[in-house]
Image (cartoon, rainbow over all chains, first blue to last red; front, top):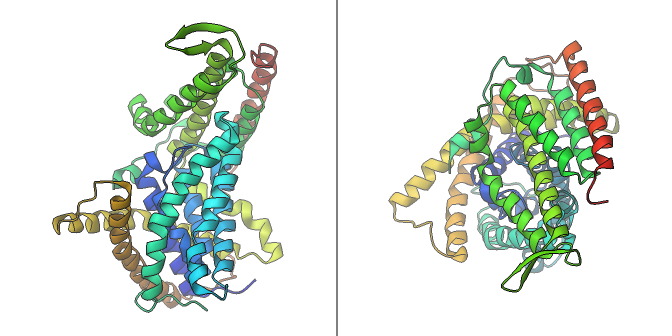
Length: 166
Length: 271
């Protein structure tokens, strides 16, 4: 595994805190079956900066500590965010940048809709597809309505944010 | 943005719940969560909720604090109940019919059972988050990741990231609030339709993100100047000790819930 430099660690810590702040502060709409987790807009970051996938994993882990679904949400929810972050990072390596950018917010939508629903439907007893659909809609709003514009802006101001894409 | 929401949940205390080792508490809660999935007995869920309520009261958590923290989940419990009343067990006995809507016996039972199950999960999460400091929970999880060191996972770095995140939550929450107020003063209206709100939220996210990155740069410099070594063994300010009361708590929690699980399983309405 590649060795991390101090800057990566500091960036990841602060991005994780930002994810947690955005989630917890908007708590009523950040947890449960009907959720629009505004912090999920940050899931586009691995597209520009690969180490941020770990930041999102930790941010989600910390945010879910405050949530209402306990350990499985803390562990599984954050692992799903990590996998989605990795998929977003892989999309960033596509040759067509235009296509890549439009697909970047898709992994968190898909992984959260089908992954989070897998344990949430067990708790609530609702149908799996219903829960997946509800979470998918919330994720679509967060990732495409908030995340995509954020990605376009950050992509055009890489130097401003000192993001190193290497 | 309400930063009190973040800081106000956990309150330090010397109560029984607070003094337990977080590893034992998390393990017991994990066991309860798993066992709760394998039953649908409303009696089991009611007894567990009652037990957790007593534990929370013994842990200096007031009823008003529980009500405040539980508010966001009222909607979720209500929706769960409504979903089952409307869509579940439609082929069971009709209790009554009003304006074409049939309330079935099975639907009521499932509504009761699953809303209680959601309440159990919420109460368990409360027991952990209201009696354990977030840094203790994070440290426990990082401790449990330690075996991954053998496959080369940067566990120390992950630990440091978790602690930076914990430290920066109140700082960034305050920053977010300041920037939001500044935008409001400049005439930004955060109300309106979803599309408008999303657009305004992006306007808010950019300066917050930029500010966070600036802080990260300063932090990196500070860590570097203190000679941080990535792979070196790190010590912790607080060393956890798993004492007799922790063993007793875990064993009693497991034994009592298993007995309840078996006994109420025989009375299960939804076999």
